[in-house]
Amino acid sequence: MLKASLLAMFLFGLIKADSVEIQTAHQGPRELQAQAELQAILTKYDLHKYVFTRRVIFDRDATNHAFPVLTLNVRFAGSEDELLSSFLHEQLHWWLRDHPKEMERALRQLRRLYPRVPVGLPEGADTEYSTYGHLVDCYLEIRADRQLIGETRTLEVIKRKPWYTWIYRTIQQDEPKLAAIVAAEHLNPD
Image 1 (tube, one colour):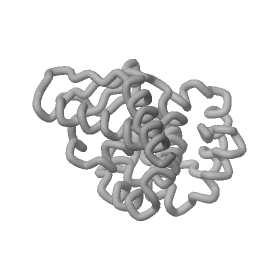
Image 2: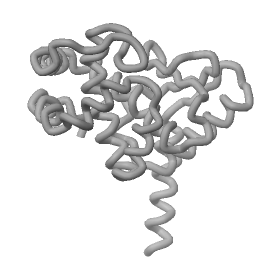
Image 3: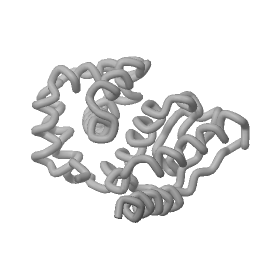
């Protein structure tokens, strides 16, 4: 019985991993390493509720972005937790894009809560609108990280992030408020 359930878990992982097409832009060694590591992550963790686009490209020259194709750089090759968190972050942008009305209502509430937000790295995102949007996306990323790798490892991942520093700090300080907004607007993917 135990062997059968382990086999089923293994096969489920392979099916999940195979359902995401992972490409590399240059076939370089770090891109290939990151590709293999993400494939292993997809097999190791049950990510079904966090995968909204099934195509991923690793590009050593790119900055992580969600659209039009989820693209990750190779910065976190060699760090499973950070690669997982980056993958979740970009996937969650797809989730939020598919919920525009809910997102707009959440952003209105966030503007009232935080009338002035930083724009530009390292504290904020590229625009004011993006900084507000990242309060939701990064909150969901942290929440997903905790569910998958636990509180301690999640805190370590957040601590090492060199960007969105105000956003992550604000989420940690005001998490109950942000959680209430996200829940009220039905923006949790689970």
